[in-house]
Length: 128
Length: 128
DNA sequence: CAATTGGTTAGCCATGAAGCTAACTATAAG
DNA sequence: CTTATAGTTAGCTTCATGGCTAACCAATTG
Image (cartoon, rainbow over all chains, first blue to last red; front, top):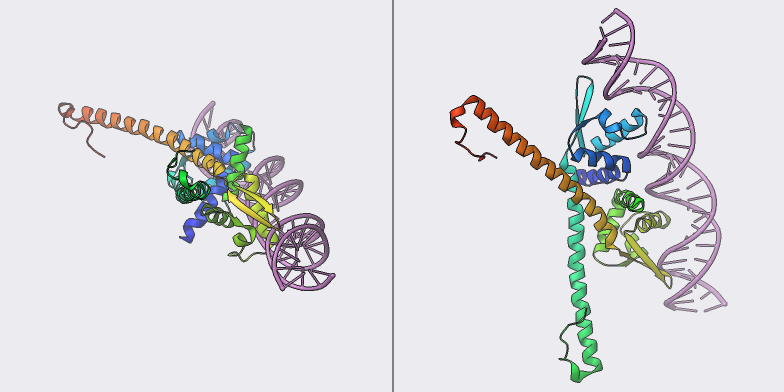
């Protein structure tokens, strides 16, 4: 579980770099060799390999070498794990928003009741 | 649009730190002052303020100071933007998986047809 | 076997991130 | 007015990141 949290660190850190996001996007379309992946980038191979390595230790990418060519593929688990984090946060956020909205509605009703007691029932909650 | 990409950089970098993720999670439950936010962490205030600043320049958090207390709140736009990125990647990934699966099915059918021509129509695609 | 290709290792450098302390500002509270 | 509170600024370390070059395997290819 601390494992998981640390994994999130690494996944987000990996995705914080545009080069690495581009690699992930490329691998979404299918596996590729290091050379193919590196081709679009104006960068020395060792520098590029560091990015691959970061992606690999984050768990986003797996690779295997056969002959002299290393083939990389996306391992979607880590990606999904990160996406889950967002969805959890959004769920909490939205739950709060709902509560907050309910609270505002209550306030509105009370204020309306205090100002013009006779008109309490006129609008039952029709404003935006 | 380069702006957007740069924003993604900052959002992911911000979320790569467990302290900052904890702050975001805390703010999902509602706004809070810097002091309240800092309280659970065993960290000097200036260090903590740096995290707040990172979150703020990433667009994840907004704050305003009234009197001597600065109140922070989550601004969900950046969060949603990052979540969108995942969903886009997943969409591409899944589209590819579908194509790949179709390809495998085609292979299976062909292989079955080659091995036992007479049984071609027996199973029409029932395996997992 | 010789040469190419594809990747790897080692090591250097500049920059930035994450932490600290110490000293300071400005608003409340007494 | 004095003191305490809540942040802020400045400046310092230390370590990680992202880039480079140069030299080095190890498979292919000719």
